[in-house]
Amino acid sequence: AQKVTQAQTEISVVEKEDVTLDCVYETRDTTYYLFWYKQPPSGELVFLIRRNSFDEQNEISGRYSWNFQKSTSSFNFTITASQVVDSAVYFCALSERNRDDKIIFGKGTRLHILP
Amino acid sequence: DVKVTQSSRYLVKRTGEKVFLECVQDMDHENMFWYRQDPGLGLRLIYFSYDVKMKEKGDIPEGYSVSREKKERFSLILESASTNQTSMYLCASSPRTGGSSYNSPLHFGNGTRLTVT
Image (tube, rainbow over all chains, first blue to last red):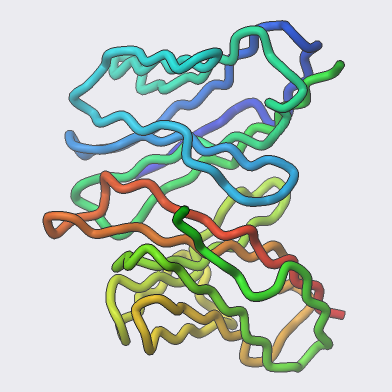
């Protein structure tokens, strides 16, 4: 069965600390995409990144980095030197080629960055 | 700048009322989606549409219907609102390229927070 698990419901860290948000997925498809979205207090989910199942290269974008490991079915997201503006709910999602119409979302991790 | 616009940010309706939630996108996307978001449950798909006049049930379609008469507009209808439909409703769209859309990120609206009393 297709599934996305974000085991951390809520995380609080002090500003400037590094924080990693975990995402574990289950799929039988060999071709799929993984996504991360950010939902700030304003409510609109914003797309952050996608990775396809054939590209395990890690990605860095400024203070954000993503670690994709097929061996552990994980796609973790790290924020380095966190800032208060990073406070949001973060969602991991899975989209499979054989289920083109369905995107599976995790339940989200609420991140609090404390000043 | 691309946009998905939901007509209302906040709505308060009474039990039994018929409720319309409107969503418009200006990106010429083929796919449109309605989700509801509840604490602890994440995002759950209500309905989606991959073309005008087409609709598909998502995971929780009961109590809802949809309408897509034009490509840019996707409406969610609560035929007879109930208190358990109090929730945040999110509309999203995505393109279909090369016959598939599994690699396309979703573009979301700001959400409509609906309260049914």
